[in-house]
Length: 584
Image (spheres, rainbow, N blue to C red):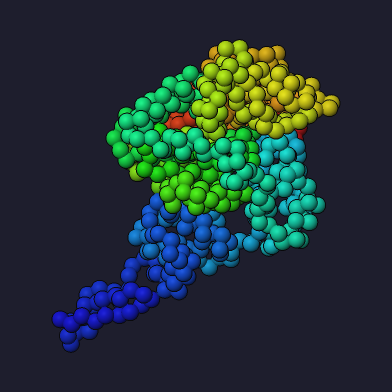
C-alpha cells in the first residue's frame, strides 16, 4: 500500500491508495472549514513576536479586530490554529464580547468607523435617543455605523458618544460630523501626573520602604498593614464593600503562588470614579497595586481595564513602562489586560475568566477566588479606588482617614454624581454623607428648573429612593432595609421633569443586554421583565413574582440586583408604577 502526500495550504494531507485499484481509503481533504494559508500568514505577521498563549486570546482578538475593522472567519480559523484551540472556542469568545465584530465568509466588512452613542440613564435623560436617530439619518451607513452602547463612564458630560476611539461629550450630531471630517479618531490623553512629578511628592517612598525589608520584618509589617486597613475602615469600592483587610488576609493564608487582579472594569451606569483617578493620578493607583501585591506576595499583578477607556489604556501603558524602567517593578510584573465591552466582567470571577481568555461567565461559588482564582491559584481582587486610598491611609495614619466620615461611617469616598444637578462629576466626600448633602454641598444644588424627586444611590442596580429619603446616610448597610444599596457610590439624581417608569425600563433594558446568558433566571427574567414593563399597565403580582425568582435563583449579582429599580418603584412610587404609561 502506498502513501501519497498532498500539500494543500500549509499542511500536508495524506491519503491511502491501494496499488492498482485507484480507490481512496480517505478523502483528499480535511473535513470541516479549510485553513487558508494566506490568512495564516497574515495573522502570524500581525502577531509578530507576541506570545501564543491561551490566556492572551482576547488581546489577539483585539489586534485582529483593530487591524481589519472586524473579525473575519478566515482569520479566526487561523488564530485557532496558531493557539492550538478549537475553532468553536475561539468563535464563542469572539461572539461573547460586544466590541468584536465577526464578519462571516463572503460578507462585506462593516463600516470602518463605528459611532457608539451611550443610551444609559444619565445620557438618556440628556436626549441620547433623539441623537441616535438623528445620526442614523445624517450619516452614510456605508461609511459609518451608528449603534447604541451602554455606559461609557462619561455620565457628567452627557450625552456621550465614542467616534472610533475618541470620545465626544457632551455630543451633538454636528459635533460628530465635524469630528468625522477631521479623521482624527484616536483617543485624547488628558494631562496627568507622570512618574517624575509623582516621585517629587514622595511617591513610591512607601512602597520602596516595604520592599527593602528582610523577610521577618516584612511579615511583621504585612500584619501591621492589615490592622491599619481594618482601623481605617477601608472597604472594597467596586460595589460589594467587603472589608479590604479581611480579603487580603484570606489570600495571604493560601499557599503560593498567588495573584493580584485589579478590577478597572467599572461599567455600572452612572459610575465613573475609577476613570477620574486613572486619568489624573495613575501612579497613586500603581503604587497601591505594588503595595497590595507586596502584601500578599503576589507572583504577578493584572489590571483588567474596560475597553471604553482607550485614553486610560494609553496612560497606563506609558506609566507601567516608566515604572519598569525606574526599577520599581520587574518587566511584565504588572500586566495590562483590555476588556471588550461586557458589563458582567465587573463581577470578579467573570473578570478572571476573561483574563484567562475565556467568555466572561461568573463562576459558581464556592470555591471563592481567594482560594481558587486566576489560573486556579489564590487571587486577590481589588477595585481601583480601594488601591488609590492605600497611600493616604498608610502614610497619614488610619485614624485620620477614618475620622473624615460622617454619622459613624469611616473615611472618604469617590462619589460619581450625575443627572439633574448643577455640577455633576466625581465628588470626594465623606462616607455617610446624605444624597441631599451631595447635591447641595458638593454638586451646586439641583439644575435650574428642576426639583428633586428621586435618586439612585448606587447606580443602575442600587434601586431608587424618593426625595423624602434624601437625608439617609449613604454607606454599606444603611440602605438595605429600604431595598437599596450604595454599591459603587454612583448617585443619579432625578427630578420632577423625569418619567420614573421610563427610567426603570431603561435600567432593565441595560440588564437585559448585559446578562451573560449563563443562567435562566437572569437571561429570561430580564427579557420578560422588559416585556412586562413595556406594557401600558404593569401586572404587579407577576412582576413581583418574576423579581423574586431572579433574586433567589440567579448565579451572580447581575440577575439578583436587576429587579431593584423595578421593585423600588412598586414600593416607593406605586402611583407611578401602576399608572398607565405616557404616550411615546
